Each structure stands twice: as C-alpha cells, then as structure tokens.
Length: 376
Ligand SMILES: *Cc1c(COP(=O)(O)O)cnc(C)c1O
Image (cartoon, rainbow, N blue to C red; front, side, top):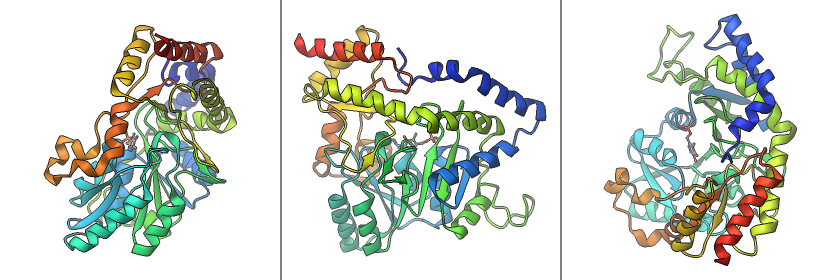
C-alpha cells in the first residue's frame, strides 16, 4: 500500500505525463520554457491572485518573500511551533529571530490567542521589532486567517502564508495560498500538487513585491539577467517539472481534490469513535496533505505505528519534535512550558496513508487494522 499514491497516479496519467515530458525534450528548452509561464498563468487564475512566481522549492519561495520585504537582524517573525523545519529555518537564515507560537489543539494550526500574547510580549521586551507572521496550512487545512488577519492589521504586521501543504484547501471559496500578503507552495512530490522533483511558487497580488521577487530569483536582475541591481538567488522551476505539473494540476482540479476528501470522509466515519480524527472547522476545506489522527497516549501511538508497520501499512509521525526543541534553535533558549499543545501532539499524532487513488479495499485494511490494535 502506498502512503501518498505517486505510483498509482503515474499509472493513470502515464501517457499524458510521458508526452508532456517528451515535448520538452524535443523542444530542448529546459530552463524557462513556455510550460513554466503556462503553469504560472493557470495557478494564479486558480488562486485568484495577480501573480504566481515559480521557483526552485517551497523553502526558497519563503526566503524570497522575506528577502523582498527586507526582513533582517532585529526583526521578529512569528511561526507555529508545530511545523516542518523550513518555516522557521528561512527566518533564521536571513538573520531575523523566529518566535515560536503554540498551536490549537483541534486544528493543529497556529493559535491566534497565543499569537497575540507572543506579539505583546516581544513588544514589551523591546529587543526585537515584530514584522511578519508565518501561519502554516498544516496537513492541508488553512490556518485561522479570520483571526490572524485581525491581529496582523492591529499590529501592522505582514502575513506570509506557508501553504507548502495547503494547496487546494479553502475557507469559504477562498483558496489556501491566497490569504497572506504573500503565500507560498511546495511542489515536492508528496505535497498535494507534487512534481517529479523539487519546485515551489509564490502567490501575491502585490505588483511591487512580485517585481522584486522576480528580480531576486534571477540573480537580482534589473533590465535583464546581465544587469544586476541587487544580490539575489538562482531559483527557478525547470521546464520538465512544469510540464509534469501541468498534467497533474488538471488531474488535481478534475477529481483528485474531491477524491481525497472522499477518502478522508470514509476514514472519519470508521475511525471517529476510536481515535481523534482531523478537525475541519465549519466553512473550512482541507486538501489532506496528511490524514493525521491523535491518540491518547504515546504508548498507543507507538504501538499502533508498529502494529501497522507489521501489517505492511505505512504510517508516519509528523512531527516528532517541536521547533523549540530543535538543536539548531537551542540558542533561542525557549521555555518548554509555553508549548504544551505542540509537545503533546508530537507525542501522540500519527499520519495514515491518504491519497486520491486509495481503494475502498485499502481503506478497509487500514481501518480494520487500527480497530484490531485497539481490540487487543
Ligand atoms: C514541505 C514544506 C516546506 C518546504 O518545501 P520544500 O519544497 O521541500 O522546500 C515548507 N513548509 C512546510 C510546512 C512544508 O511541509
């Protein structure tokens, strides 16, 4: 059984994907081919934003935005404690200070009440200047932008939406990746919209920001690549990856997003009475980058994880370690007591196989084995 269904997806779309890659090989335009522009046009339209700027990966997408905003040493950037390392890494990499914020027990996303407290504390201490909030759309579910936007406005902060896992998620009819002043996605193969290698993109409706990022991702170009007006990156999406993504994007909107939600619904129906299933608040829609259940105790989580492994069912722990406990951030000297929810989640969550191609039989196998673990 596959955890993310990349092989099943390729089997279904083999001829289209092969043909799309083959076209690029024949045209020989491997960097900046027309497929890249076509993808940017389609994705910006889907997201309802003015600009989609593709780049090398989801991590650099965030770095590009922070750099374009001029974030630097002495600035405070608020990130959830429960996320992939990238979210906080990009902040530290440009010399600013990541301020970790505990998450909501139900949604696993940044807790707006704790965010407000963290901002107030940084202001009172007077050492750092609050500049940016980076909410993460964890496991496919958009963060609470209704509250986070109010807080950002009140404190005059920018929002960078880390939607690496969020593509396809929604609040009402507004898409994940379109909530922040800028939003970023990752095309890492296992993400909701994945390439066959690395890739990423930035979404924004801010013309000036888009212009700066477009320059930064191309060695700080001015009039052209050989006129360099700032220090930048070399960060681009290869034409072959864009060609793959064009096919996969069509599948994503045609049926994959709906199908993965059907799988989640089947899990919910069968599992809600025995474990804590993902909480999707009213009006929210998840793209289920992960289907993450929460157990009562670490022993249950580890026991179930091993039981599934023995039965040939893949499952993973996202994530084992909160940001504030990462060795790379030990210099920040965080107080463990401020992160009770993240600490608990790291000890009790488990992500089950989920993808649009999971069969009813496979779903039953997972469900039966979760049940059999608790019956013994
Ligand atoms: C995957 C991921 C990233 C980084 O994306 P890459 O394309 O691997 O660089 C950033 N943030 C989150 C939350 C992610 O899951």
